[in-house]
Length: 138
Image 1 (cartoon, rainbow, N blue to C red):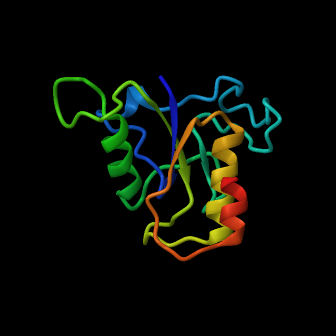
Image 2: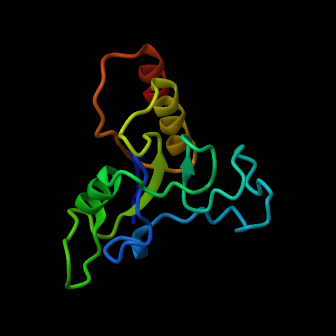
């Protein structure tokens, strides 16, 4: 049941191997247009998209979904089985459909994940050293 944030290209939260293991922000009321939990993100029911700046962190690249499946694909007798198949995946989209993003976006995604209860943050990303990202991780 641990919350694992996948800070990546998003996650296909409708995928049959993942749909039951997607984190739900219980402090938000879906679709009311209000930031119920006061975290600065309106209706962030299942994570946040830092590329399009909205509450739909759906994966347009596939990489984040692959990572999420490796972590928490359901024990449902078909498809893959994740190494932590009871974990909850928090989708945080910081990469676009081409796998590109900014260090500032990744840092914001890390902060979002930590501030909203992720106990583990997966960053399967490339790039060089960034003091901004280091500060977000710390």
